Length: 50
Image 1: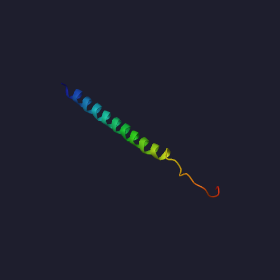
Image 2: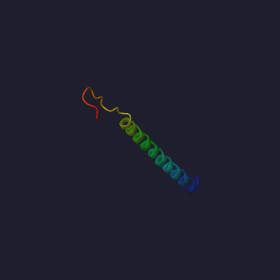
Image 3: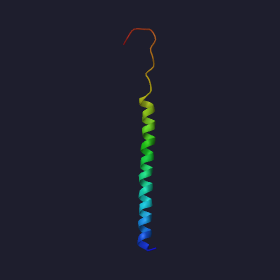
């Protein structure tokens, strides 16, 4: 193989890993944020409103 072809493979592999790590990080962040957003407020029992 030509050296230029090897360089193109390395760059494309690097780009693939960069994009996939960004996607995994975004998915992890979305998972963490959704847990906080879906938490219910504690139910109050009795007492005056407000």
